[in-house]
Image 1 (cartoon, one colour):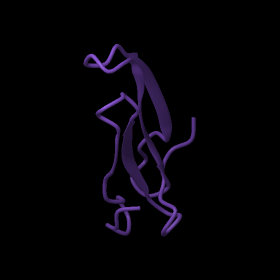
Image 2 (cartoon, helix red, strand yellow; image 1 turned 90 degrees about the vertical axis):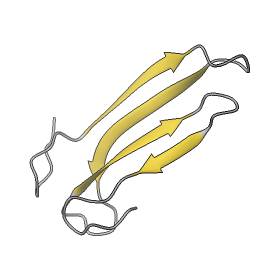
Image 3 (spheres, one colour; image 1 turned 60 degrees about the vertical axis):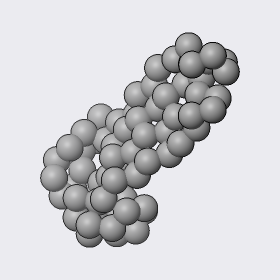
Image 4 (cartoon, helix red, strand yellow; image 1 turned 45 degrees about the vertical axis):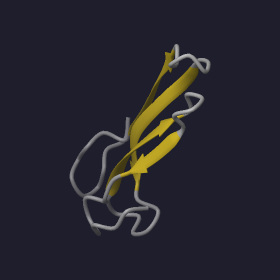
Length: 68
């Protein structure tokens, strides 16, 4: 696996199925990706595709501090 050029964190993606909360099942994915704003750091993210709870969270980049 590749690592972030700035902080050394492993760049990866994981996912798991979730039975949901009565509206149906879905998938939760999370990971660490290269920042598309500076291309030098990384940011953590999470995407929830469970019906009724769909959301996407991005966290600040370790290099530029901006949130993609």
